[in-house]
Image 1 (spheres, each protein chain N blue to C red):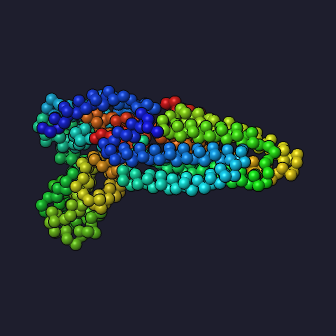
Image 2: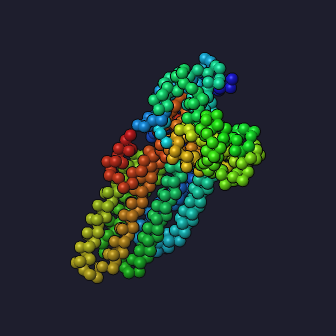
Image 3: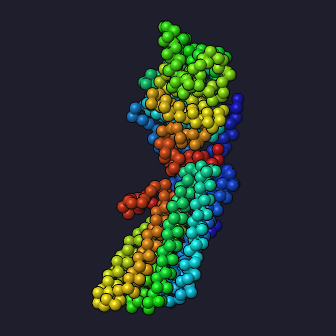
Length: 240
Length: 295
């Protein structure tokens, strides 16, 4: 995703170093795109009861895992060769951490695909599909925006994602309560409702990972760690 | 003189730097305001108190209104591109610039509240208190023992041979050299390896019990192993001495110093804790330099 802000990492005396950082960014965004598609297709497979698609998602997870290993290796080589400092160092360290988040998102997509297959075998759950679609869209847009914030080094957008995560948590809690009520009403629903619950949980985790990526973007841009700090602190860091 | 040319040509570079459009998202400060240093240039317990220091080579101003405290027992690293004035500033601290005829130093420079540039000050005594180690090892063409004993002898620090022996042994031990040379103290110093010679020069500097050791690129002529030994030594010496080190190796500054000062075209742009300088420097120019964007 070429962007004018790439200049931030593209104006070293060493052109090779520029290329290496640029390649790291590009590959990270490629992995991000791949993971986004995985989640999107896993939800689609579940809602549409598409077993073939679910199998594909499960198989593709290996590609995501490989990208994680490759990106980590590239980041380690940059550290070994260039001893990056300041914003370059923050980029490389953040990528190493965010890659782990993306890989976990990939795992969640695989989990959803697995549940899609299970639900097809057990018969569709009576409730929860609307919530899955809703929360799925919500966390997918968060994931997309977090990658976008990374590409554009947009700390304000990253802050918005952090705030959004709270809403996803609320939506998840509400959906879980509904499912719980339904299971209490008729115990025969428990097994299938639990599968839906796992899917919702996986989607909620995707939101958490998008939030982690957003926190790393703020660290990259502002040089301050906003993890485990109150939202007001993150707002202060971003506004200065 | 080379410094003059560098200063003039770099002025143009400064103007260019000043008009570079600010990077978004960061509070860019690419313009240097004279006398304005970002970060923490001052200390509650200064060994050196330096205010509005200016150094001229003839008509050219090599150091432009710098104010800085150097804290007791700290290791402070001076970094910056060639010709930025870091060595010139270092050499003000024990009046090494006195030997350059066209050099003039202005401002208030105090070592423990005593004016360094007081005309009545004994410069030899000052340099005993503020020792110096240079870029290239420069042992005297004498024995290892005599190199270290030279300072204590001329300053009358030892009355008896056994006292002098103790000083030599202690200094060589502190410099991490004793075990390597204890059996050949009479051998000529110039026969030692480069790294050993540099550590001998450090031993020679600390033999007169200085309070401060100035180091002007002490490792630039050494291999990585010898460099590691000298860096190890700096860490140990910092318990007893204040150390000011000029270095072109950013990694070295990051490894050995507590605070780092970034010089640019005669200005002191930023002074901050070393950890901060190398992870999130405050000034755009510091960031550009340490990340290899110019220099």
